Image (tube, rainbow, N blue to C red; front, side, top):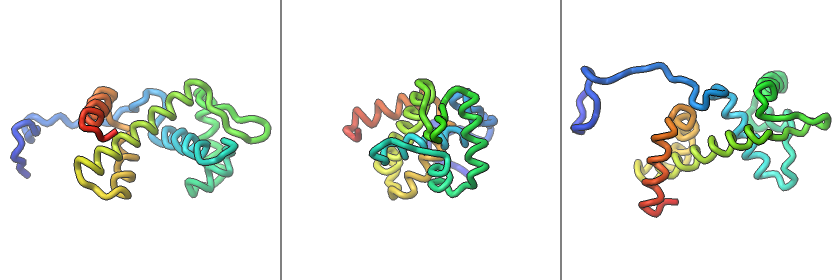
Length: 150
């Protein structure tokens, strides 16, 4: 298990650590729900998204989705109208957009820098977006902009 890079950590100086909540607000699953709602709202001309739509999109049961949405509601990230429509609070909108931007930037990075096929880049970006630091994302964004990839 050796690498040629002078900057890569070795077994002697690597620092393994548990993965904290990146946003400090919700876990990865909550971030995935916010991102899914945002994407669905963008795809739907009327912008209407309901719990049943989220359940169908993700392939989850309606009760599981309802529990997750209630947690997002308790954290003041979404509102659910009597009609069932899901609306973002300003904080929820901001967080959802931030998560989706991470997804987009990481997908571009993986496609163009690592030469990974788009389907794999999308899948991996979806996992990485939840744990990568704001500082690293800012560096990636600058790199992509400087190299004309955005």
